[in-house]
Image 1 (cartoon, rainbow, N blue to C red):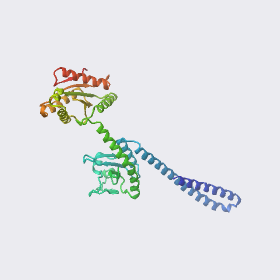
Image 2 (tube, rainbow, N blue to C red):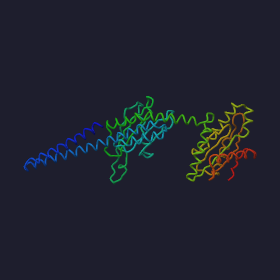
Image 3 (cartoon, helix red, strand yellow):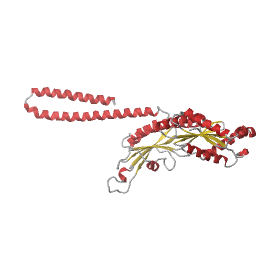
Image 4 (cartoon, one colour):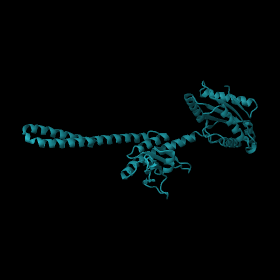
Length: 382
């Protein structure tokens, strides 16, 4: 790109020198040369305009290459999966003719694939997600074109529809991790070999960055889980509680908390042993998860003590959740110990609370429930 700019500038300099020479020569000749001189000046003006356009084009290409270079370096500068996916989609959406972009990462455990999009509705993303050729082989690229019934009125569905797509695979550690796809809404637009090469270049940079970020997320998720119960662990609980308390105060939202433990669990351990006691905890956690909402955060705080953080919830919601958990856990016997019951303390966030005082109020309520006879719930002082 630097050589192109130097060549254009040299051409401009030569034209300026030629124009000066013609002006000097014109002074020495008669007026009979005026017509010829005018033609030369017109030709020079046309060439100057052409060189100016070339210079503008070169500058635009240099700026675009610089932008892509920054994006490529940013891809490897983060291990946050959402951020890496967002930057990949931004770069793909900036390619010539691309109006939308999509990344699809199949779940290695055959679960729900991860889909990230830019410029697509949820419905469009579900319809246009690319998983590869039907025979399972890895394609270098996949091109798609779509035709629709004729729409007479202006602004009809065809005008905003996807008309073509191009997908290329992304590789992690030598194996495909999914497809990167771009789409156009321009009728008659097709993607050719140059588009394939550009998208492949992006996919080559994005694939390893996405794979590293996904592995980091998976490792972090495993680190946040309690090995026995599969619930979030104590560290994750306190980090999440602090974050949710700050968010609730910032946006004036409600937040509730349930703390509970298994009644007489020490006696259970003494009776059947710690190994069997662990199986009781694991089964109680399974039953608890079956009634906790997807928006709530269930954690094992330690020993036989559990907590559930309830965003956008009030004291009554926490009380109702405790009763659902109590019913689920005590509905039928667990192993050798028969039916298990729970005691709980519930609290709702107050304006003066921070994460520590909020937790302490619920914790004190739990102790009052134990002192009051167990198998019951007590609300923190309001």
